Length: 427
Ligand SMILES: Cc1cc2nc3c(=O)[nH]c(=O)nc-3n(C[C@H](O)[C@H](O)[C@H](O)COP(=O)(O)OP(=O)(O)OC[C@H]3O[C@@H](n4cnc5c(N)ncnc54)[C@H](O)[C@@H]3O)c2cc1C
Image (tube, rainbow, N blue to C red; front, top):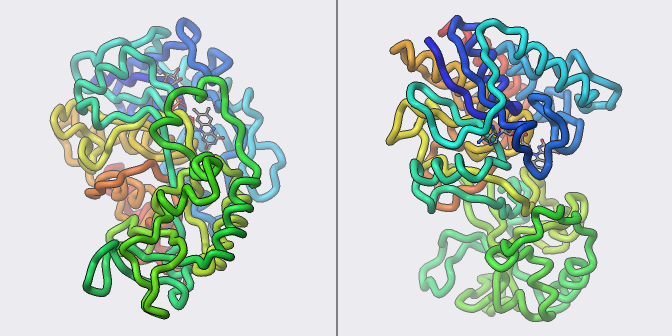
């Protein structure tokens, strides 16, 4: 059973080894060093393009729990990371060269994997996993666009922060949709008085920002301005834009607020709330400091921070089923960051799942993803649940089925038990 994997990054390498370990064979296309990307510097497979940290090792942190689940699923990338770890406190930090070289050698030495150093320009025949990552090359991006529909393929992330709904001060916020005469509504509005807005504004425009890389300085700013850049156009600009109060009445005093920050449900249960229109390039600690100046958010717990960066990803809820398989062309699977997850380990996890899923599918067998009580399963559920405002997502406890802060320890135990049970279903 031969499967083609396009892209020898974290997800592609993981997928290839999962297939090989389960008895399949792989043709793995990696375009570097023949063609490079603006962020990769070597010809190694699984190159870490930026930080050398795979984030927390602690099980009490969703990043740590995800890695432990993947260890239990025999992830080769996590094995290589553990084997090339250097001191990094509570984080799994790796010697990036040793890490990538190790994975490159393991891939080259595996008789079931044939590595082809060539840019894939088309989606070939047969069962294919597309794992070309955030910097997918132009020709294959066009092919993906044809498969998904151009409107379902994005080239930039423009992400607003997500906060834990339970951390909002509901005494300082009210549900309403603009101009709605009835109470309730889809938005949780966080009002500000003029003084509160002025203080917030001053902090926002003077907050520290992340520098743009050269290849990110493009016209995308016209389409999705960071909120702090929009704010620089004038002190009141936001009150005519994402913070406009028109059509809203604060039930505590029956008056229109001076400004509002609106929160919208990010998941069906409403446990995660998205800050509408607040995509930002502020540094993470600055986001927390500035947004907590909004009275209802003074204790806000951030599940995801805002960001804007170059990223290629598909509108997964429309394009993929829970097998990470194209709904319209089932022989094509997607893996890695391209699926709409965010981060090294999340991308690897979607490589691991796509590898197993593609092999089982090629063998005519059923693939059921792990339950959403696990981090891996919860990510797949996020990718494949209808979502009109789909944006890439990193792993966080808010995604886990049945999770609440009070039952955190039990949820971690359940995740590890369920992933172990799940593995038995196909091994
Ligand atoms: C600039 C930048 C900085 C980042 N920093 C971080 C960070 O600090 N921490 C973090 O967790 N995440 C970070 N990310 C996200 C990170 O890149 C991804 O999470 C992760 O590398 C994605 O894994 P992947 O396998 O999907 O893609 P990649 O690891 O990028 O692998 C894709 C591979 O496909 C190859 N390829 C592309 N097109 C073709 C083609 N047509 N034919 C053959 N090969 C092709 C590429 O050369 C590459 O090797 C960053 C992303 C970018 C763009």
